[in-house]
Length: 173
Image (cartoon, rainbow, N blue to C red; front, side):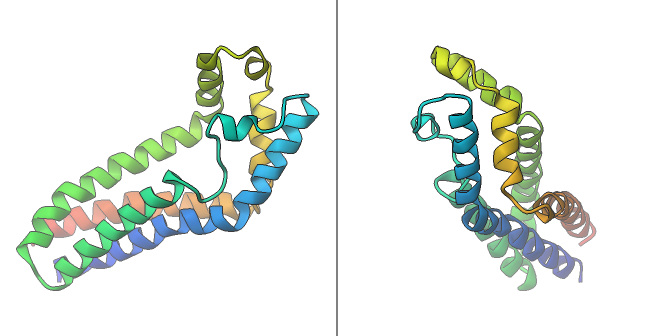
């Protein structure tokens, strides 16, 4: 029964992670357009986002990383549903990593302005240094529907809470 609870939590966590590229695929292009429009308003050359690897869509690590986590969580869920001792052992390892990774995602979201400023400063490009980063990021954020912020908070709650429940369930097995 405890392994089953862990498996259910792992399926929910997998779904939570898959929601990231789905939302970005749907609304990311509009966020990119809004960010580029804001940069044009600030008289920043076109293409600066692409040149610096800033994306709001589902490309690159914004897809492969969440899908990889979802794949691992689904694999663990299958092992736990089957009652495999490997599922329990691997849950300790990977569930702990998921907690850390989600903490890093949350930290990255909370420090986006300072992180982007620092990245631009490292480039040494005076045009990048004069970008109003809060306005630029706010423009992109506003292109996502308001429910996305709620969805992000629910996702974090599922990942942190579900991971804690999965680890507790395995500990009690």
